[in-house]
Length: 194
Length: 278
Image (cartoon, rainbow over the protein chains, first blue to last red):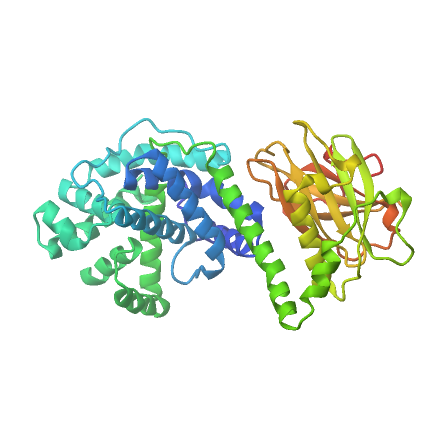
């Protein structure tokens, strides 16, 4: 069983963010070693090509460097904060280019798990590999509508009404599916169930 | 927990609330521990989902590219810092005097010596295995640390852009790593210019050291935030100020293991300059 990414890890990453805010490049590099692969993968999935994704991931990390001092641990965990920066960066890029994210063909979750970059420590890499296996099973167990709603909510800049149109459901149902999808994912990944 | 509260929490974690809804929800978060704990669970779920190894490997140049952009930001900030005092000074009508003083800086060899009492800065050229000291006399002494910074920044920028202005014995050529430290002993601040240092790799970083060659005492002058190019121009200060004759000062760069507190003394490989004194 692997430990949950809980408050201890969040506290450690909060400290890294505080050091980053003070101009500590080593702390920033440690944050990169933890977040780099995830944010890059997120960007690839949102914009659909590796070239833009690399540039947007750079943008996101520069924003993290510049705004680390504004992080508020009372509002979110550091990783959620970083993900929000990365997603908004990608969505802004798509809006500026007047390009829509791929509504109909979302990448499959399954695929050969790639190793983390050389900076990720062995513990995180091992945890991530375990998660990869569990996640594939977890997503497969989520009903299709909920899974699609959750993926669109996470990986696209589409509004709820746009998602509703794509899925052919009322907005209320879409929000409910997003909630159920995320809760199902939480329950499936819960250590209690493994 | 009510389904609508759960729904708000899910949309909050997914950054799908508008500004008003978000502010309202964050106010609740601050006063409802159970809700905060629930959001924490959702954040953990999202974190594990997104941290799962994906099909897309980050390119090996990603971190170097980020480093380069942050270095660029730092240089732009340094230029703004240098320009701001200029603007302020100009308002007081002193700009012309300082422009003249910086404009007629003469580059001379140190061993010939500057006129007694004349202000100067030292410059130490470094390549792999040796360092060379020279002295750059200044026309006027800066009135305060800000004025000294302006002089140094102007000189550093000019030498960075036109290396031909360096003393001849400090003009290193070829593909090897090299650099120089420009240092004002009066204000204990300076600039270091680095060219073509190889990437450090993870867990390593370059440290700049200043040493009093008479006593052998070594002080750390800073960590070099080098990007992928291995080149850059950086400001540094030495505190406390050194109690050493300027012609006994030397600089060198080492490659050190990263440590939370950083090394107190140089222990890694000397990559630039003559480190035999430490």
